Image (tube, rainbow, N blue to C red):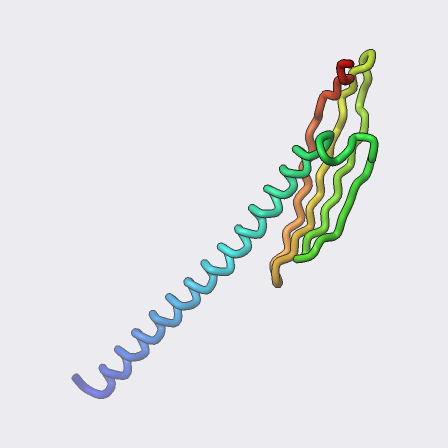
Length: 118
């Protein structure tokens, strides 16, 4: 093997290693971003579930800023009434920042609110 062949082989090996490392780093970045996106969606879904349970319906807007880069808000609006029953639009908004990765999620649902039996 000549010196030229050895140099060409070394360039090919280092080029391949560099590409593999960059691909791995990109996969890690994408995985971290997907984890933050998933967490934001789960938090927004949780807010929708909390509406009317531990977040009162009477508060048309409820929001909080929490430690760890989490800001959230929930909005409730009566869409229509039929007798004492109501159709309520519930919107949850989540802003989640983890390091340099940020996810903003907005979910909307309709809920039926019935009067409580005495």
